[in-house]
Image (tube, rainbow, N blue to C red; front, top):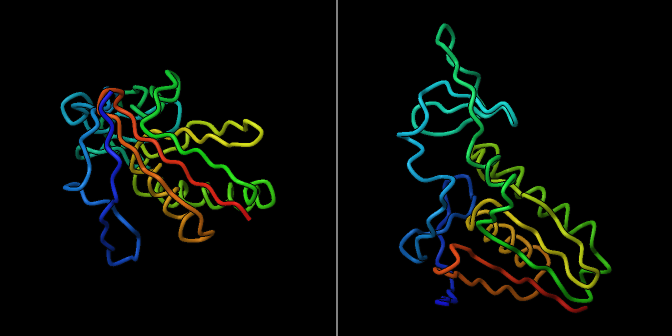
Length: 177
């Protein structure tokens, strides 16, 4: 299995939101998001989450008025049903036990902020494994942003790993008190 451990270069948008540079990471092919510009006509809405496909991307806008609306499940909802994660963030350490709620609130806030502009970026599920918490996300970008937010806000150590064979990105954040 090919794995790459990368130190991510990043840049800041005008809003101050951190983005990952595409030239510093491998391309992970997600079968649920491939060719979506060709697959969905404008105005397609997802009956599960309410996202609408407009001008080549999924948004939270309303379907165009006057047009026939096609209803089809979006790639993120398909991924969640199939439990096909694009990124997995594992949290551990003694600090996690003492600050669990604050840490999970921060993770959910990152998802909420990202999901405003990118409806396909979602947390699929959060699994509490006792000493660890596993967060499964629809994309490697959201997973990396959540990990970097935890590292920035709570310190600790963050490791990012991309597996080309599995089409999966993993991150492990840990902090001991």
